[in-house]
Image (cartoon, rainbow, N blue to C red; front, side, top):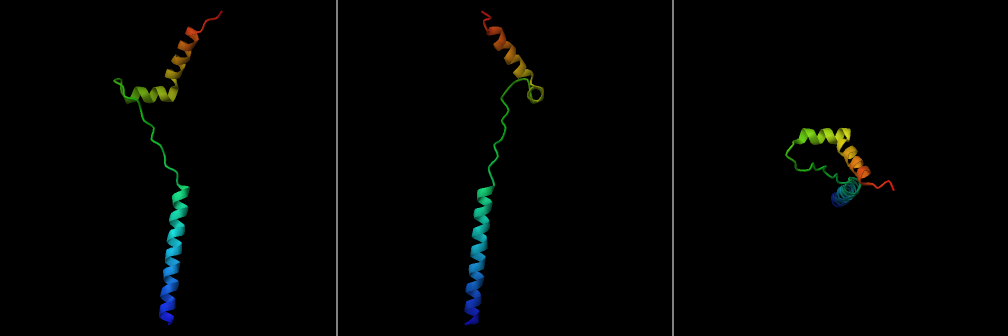
Length: 71
């Protein structure tokens, strides 16, 4: 009878730990989204430079300011 009790205890321990670990790890790890670079003919170096230094954002702001009517 002690063999049967030991086997039941071992089975219950193994199933409870694995289920607990899987559920905790599964809920706590969010998925990361990849940053996708736009397709262009000028190459990745120019895009990385624009992303780093913000020249494209600055040009977009200047274009918006030029379209604005001061009156």
